[in-house]
Image 1 (spheres, rainbow, N blue to C red):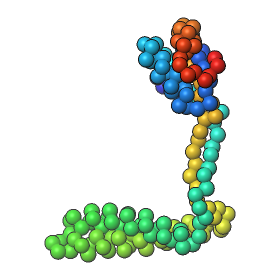
Image 2 (image 1 turned 90 degrees about the vertical axis):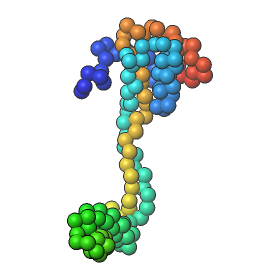
Image 3 (image 1 turned 60 degrees about the vertical axis):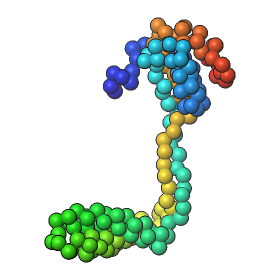
Image 4 (image 1 turned 120 degrees about the vertical axis):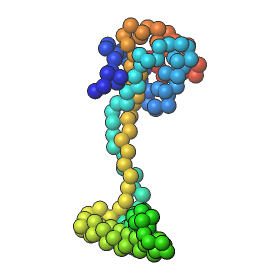
Length: 158
């Protein structure tokens, strides 16, 4: 791990349920001219959250494949069109888009059918921390605690 992400003798200055609260505490310390370059905000108790965004069907997969293939075809057609003979730029681009659509549909459907119905939904995933701990160099712990005790609206007990 790079040196920038470590402290020599880290001590816990506080534990927060939300990143925004940990960030607010460090921001307050910075406003009070505390040497915040000696602080780390560490997300702990990681968990993966998956949000299901919809049901996958053959038409939906084909449409998504066509859309992504069209963009790829447009890119390749435009690049080839730049070097095409005069007057053939537009047919080259349109040909690239058409081939991209066909390629995207075939590739998308092939991938969908390869799963054999074991995953008929789309989703996005994210890794989140359950808690956020502010760590500080041991020699600055007492000063950090003293400053945070004076922080207005402080909802966290240290």
